[in-house]
Image 1 (cartoon, rainbow, N blue to C red):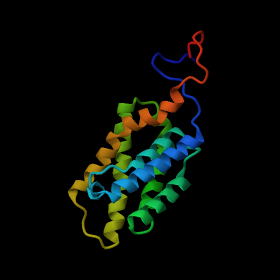
Image 2: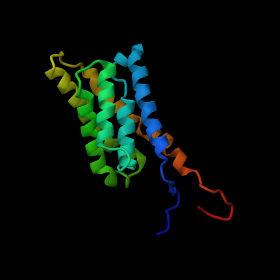
Image 3: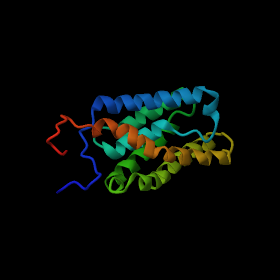
Image 4: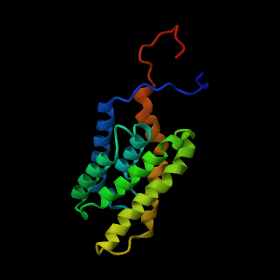
Length: 176
């Protein structure tokens, strides 16, 4: 099969890069939650975004077990009910892995619309667990977080796929 014009032949993903991006995402979430900005309801979940991205692009390397562990770390860091982020990230990862083949056929702009319901479902699970745990009804502004997270999907795709787009051995006589 001939590659269509404008499509890139991607190199295999480096496992060290995958896991370091996940660690950077969890550190980004921790920094956002420790700042005054992190208490705002519209702040995107960088870890959920990175988990979904790697579940879609590398489902055999990053799976539900990693989502559970990272969810427990987020629960401990945010001192919330143990398991609420773990549950949300596990469900998010399950659905991301289940749609990963179909999602990759679409352009990045259309992928954004497909991952938005996933982020909304994860946010709804977190809010439902908080409500069941005795917290008050969440504010309506918390519905902006999935939209902001899905809005970062094109940028995350460009940044996280950049190391795979470089040629392994540049040669002016080879077109790929």
